[in-house]
Image 1 (spheres, rainbow, N blue to C red):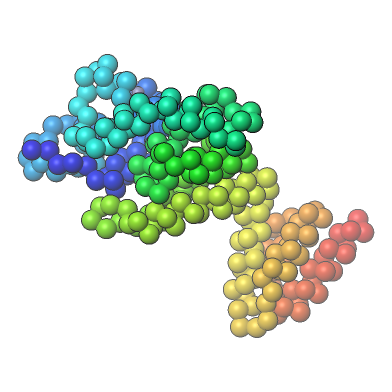
Image 2: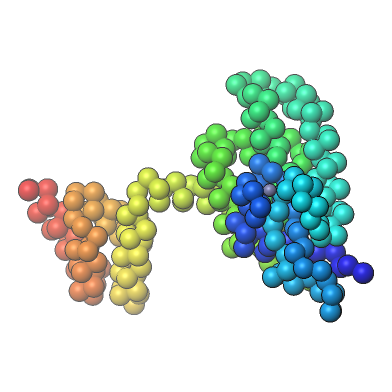
Length: 261
Ligand SMILES: [Zn+2]
């Protein structure tokens, strides 16, 4: 008899396979992702992650593949998709949706919601406020960034008990999605910011026993870099610094000299 698959295993399989169907290459939430068993459970009846791959329902139907006994997951997705149109009509009536959202946009939002609600129970289908929040995030950061942030957050914050995500960790992971989008946007807009954080880390470490202003340090490093002082020079500079006053005096001097050129 087959064991049902845990959320953790399902998540690990999807993650390993980059949330993509291994047959057609399409990714969730554009397709309904399921866990396929590529070997028969023979010896011990355990679901070894190596025997499992992410597939989409269409490919499995075409190829007659072996969907892992996963009734609750599939039944839930099917039921939710059946409710889709009804839900759209309902959502469209809400004032928030009157402005510039096509039916395609709504279907897309609901697909994302359905997919992720399997991992973020708090982020569940049928909760208009979650869909509105998702819509706001997508408007602000773009669909791909939000999906990326969801994966990052899930990876970082999910904790497991008996192979299921704990309710607390899911709430935390969900609450971090917007923040991760913001950080990723900053990094994208300014690829050097990561290096500046790293340099500040060196400085923090060097000045840990004395006065040190974290916020001002970063502002000054950023200012110097914006003036054209390279990451390498800033790094060499903080390596020789051994007090806050030395850092402050030195970086002010660097900025001033740079401004003259
Ligand atoms: Zn496929």
